Image 1 (cartoon, helix red, strand yellow):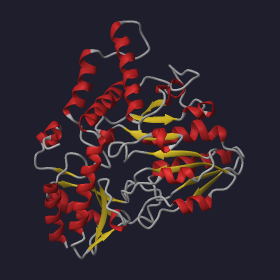
Image 2 (tube, one colour):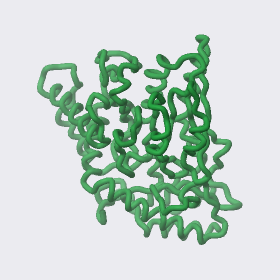
Image 3 (cartoon, helix red, strand yellow):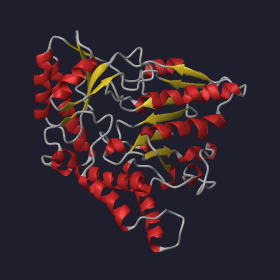
Image 4 (cartoon, helix red, strand yellow):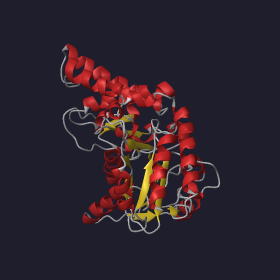
Amino acid sequence: MSDVKSKFPFFTTNPDIIYFDNASTTQKPQVVIDAINDYFSKYCANAGRGIYTTANKVTRKIEEVREKVKTFINANLADEIVFTSGTTASLNTIAYSWGLHNLQDEDEVLVCFEDHDSNVLPWIFLKETLAVFGKKINVVPFKNTSAGDASTDDILSKVTVKTRIIALTHIHNVYGMETDVLELKKQLPDKILLSLDAAQSISHIPVNVQELGIDFLSFSGHKMFASTGIGVLWINKRIHNQIHPFLVGGGTEKKLPFLLEGGTHNISGIISLGSAIDFINEFGLDTVQQKMLDLSQYLLAQLKKLEKVEFLPGIAFSKCALGYGIVSFNISGISSNEVGFILNENNIYVRTGSHCTGDGNKINDSVRVSMHVYNTKEEIDKLLSIVKTIT
């Protein structure tokens, strides 16, 4: 891990930049860039559209990556892996390929309005769409705990005989806290489906779909060192008979995954995803998880020494030493955008604002520091030296 930054051309080109916006997107290692370039320069063709050599090679490559994803998330079958354009597309696909066809009058969908818009708005829009045709479904909000993770107690208090699906976030994109999916699953009737947004967890901690006991998993490639425009929707085999086509076109078939993969794949994106998985596997998610814990706790400890720093829910309010690379805070008397501007002037890139949360009025604007494998304590020290001049 000591020389990991050297594997990313962005930092070679921009040696003075400290990049702390990894929850938004990660930088790309050279091996991923090379894999994309190889496709376009050496064997560019469409998949499943020809019998010639390069077309067959591309088709094989896509299925090889599907197998890699299956192993990466410990899925049972490769046909549970659907390629999409990202987490947002995956979450919308759940609403329209499952929800549109399976939700009946007065059925309930549980969501948290403090989660990312992509985990909330598809169900709101589906509710509005069904209302046009005279069908009423209810989108029921549940709360987070004061520490910032989904409240199992509140979710269970909202569950009724009409509850059909619960939309969860694995690691929160602002609070940086992990939902205890296993504990919740143990207390729910088996008929209630669980949809898990793993956009922030997929490259920070091991994600095991069989162990979690969920039904849908959604994530994006660009948050795990792959290119933009590629994502995954994992669908548990047990509910494949409940899934209907969405965005039909060339290549659409009656069975998953091709039922949901009409049209030309984002081939270069899929190839980049396979290369990114190989890159992560070189050092392992356990190593990443430990580094994120160390960096998060170090940043938290130093920020706590500053009187004017005010924390959003997250690891600052946890009774345990946790850390998944995300710490969000404000500085009393100065807006988050002003802080971001000052940090930018010093070549430190952070995210400011409400971070696409489903309840922007409740979550105040904040400075979000989000880290990954190439970040260091020395970079945190540089950030802190600037924050101290503000406070």
